[in-house]
Image (tube, rainbow, N blue to C red; front, side, top):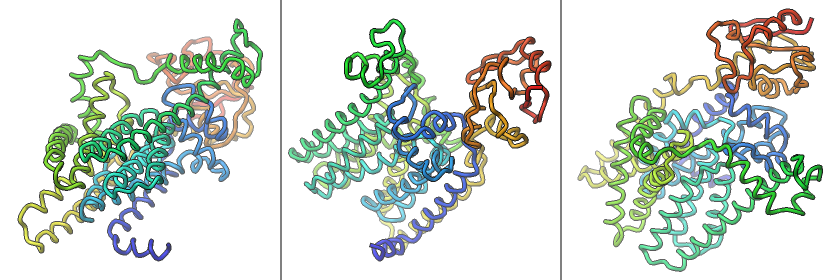
Length: 516
């Protein structure tokens, strides 16, 4: 096994060195680019509380349950950075390997290198690579599903393991991140269309069965959360017939009611709201322009046009390859389905989700662009010697692009702002003495837990021994109660703090007080 790995590295030396360098960058970034609000919330509310707790709690629809469950297992290392971001960092490295691997299935190595580099160079991909959220790990599941689909369709294996891998990748992707449905459906459609067009009826039925099994398993996993949430609400509701009961007893007595209550609770505060269909359609170009600008700065419109061209080209390419090359047809359906089905889903749902939800699209864009260039070069009529020069030029080009990207601000900008300011003042005081505190914003409790592993008693201002407030409160134009800041902006509050507390430390953004 070891000899096989060494031989593979030697045979793919450029890719191996590139992946090694990116791995070092990801690891450094994991520890030095401080986490932002969503990450800290995930750590405080789920990861730090263990895998079982994370598996049955889902207070908001954008909670990445599967990621929290897996990451919570890393608490054994007693390092908050590893627990929060370790899985994402590993997934980011694996994603480069898998993209290169998929590329080598369908094109020559230099172009597979190009696909990997274009993906790694995207700002949004890089910034998500080590964040303590499920986006990067979900892309890993996507790539595994693509490889499993390739094995089923092209290698023509009837082996059950590839269907099992396909099922597992779909389930894991949806459990990690519900919005993975935007790639789950396209990958099923693409592989299903291939088997349909090639009239592989048995494998098509197997694939459909695998998708149904994946859906049922996913439904079961989420039903556990719905039951737990619903039972918890019912046993705490004063007017409920189940008030005061233990959660498990409520689930046994009223499983359907518990599940329905849990579902209703989660759907009551969705993070992705439907908008007017006409506005969704008309706003889609601007939405994607902004998304692609977050991938490659100043290239938003160009990449929008490229996406449209790739969809049109690979639909045409698929039609041309139906009777000829199996790999050509599979690639054509993989790229055209990956881009067009996801776009159609957004239009049908009339939604413009968070841009990071669609980060997986850069997989299709990168592989599609590299394959398009590969086919053009192969049919250009150039001599073998010239093609070889082009291939080395491709490798050099992508190395220069990624190297340049590393020097840009968007590629290395801080993720956190207010969080860093809070930690700055906490470093100046003895946090172990904070026994009770009046939290003036949600950031503070998360920063205390992540960096210092302490959870002082959360008390009202009249009972708290410590309070940390931001300097903006003293400004006349301060806007009170700006989520997730909970600080009141009134003179009685300021006067109470000044009369009953003494200033400990102050920075440009925060002031720490302890009771006199």
